[in-house]
Image (cartoon, rainbow, N blue to C red; front, side, top):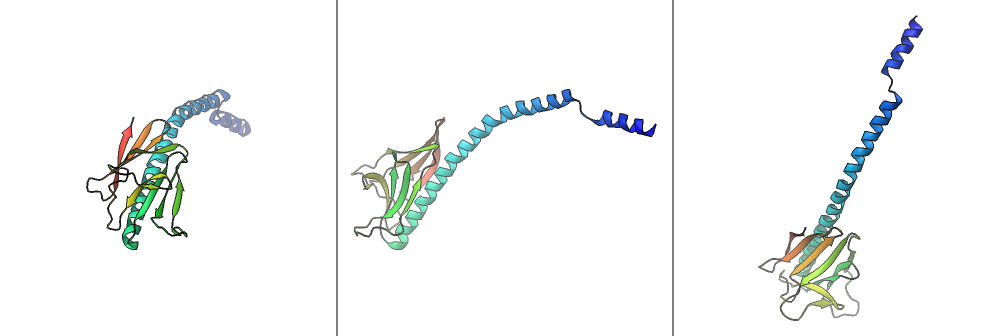
Length: 172
């Protein structure tokens, strides 16, 4: 009698096949709702991360211009999807401390408007020139734009005092 009672208790505590199928189908429905929202969140994180990385490189170029007492150029390659920093040198050795970075594959970087005079360039690419006093050259681009595949974007806009750039929202 105790053996039979133990089997009945086991059967009462176990899940039926229908209950398992119902729970799994609910998990599938919840996952199908959550995945698109998560993918948008991840894409938005890539956009913000790229904007912060570009701002960090701008600060590094500006600090380097001040500490080394020579102009630094932050160049933007819109077609190649890259950007970097190099000293404005006339020597053949170039800049040993130059940095080259690649834009995240889900983000596009573009120069929106250029300075008022002759455009600052580096190897025929638009460039932001940081002067030894820490300011931005007046012929540098005033606005850079980062846009993801969904059209969401971030603008990097030159401050009115020409002491750097700040991040703002754009797009959708």
